Length: 182
Image (cartoon, rainbow, N blue to C red):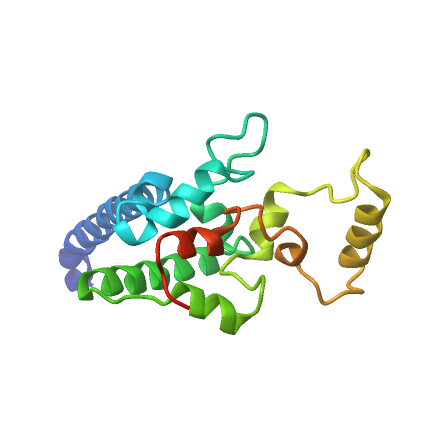
């Protein structure tokens, strides 16, 4: 019994140290997640310049008054759960950093061509995070019909299939203008 009393102070101290360390790690992680979620951070690598340039003038970019301004993480990370968001963010960050530091060149036009016309690295949950009301007053009847079919799961189409210019305008043309090969 005396052994438990003698070690209880040490155990309490270790629990306190563990708790303080957990708080510090959580705080640092939260700060890093926030600081790496800005458009400026995403565009800090030169490879992202075409994406940034087309986003600025796109419907959700800086130049559009009155439109929802989306950050890169709003579209290019899943919003279905915090764990999936953080896991995908970590994997994408490691992949992008490794590609940048190793000087890996991505054949963007070839990738677009092989994946199909509007299959981009965007998540439906990102669209739906902001666009909760898909059958809003004032939209054309054709859009109401398409959105109702989408909501009912009666179509294979996704948001990007119909709204492919929403994030970056004509990104493919931008790559061509920059001299990227197909």
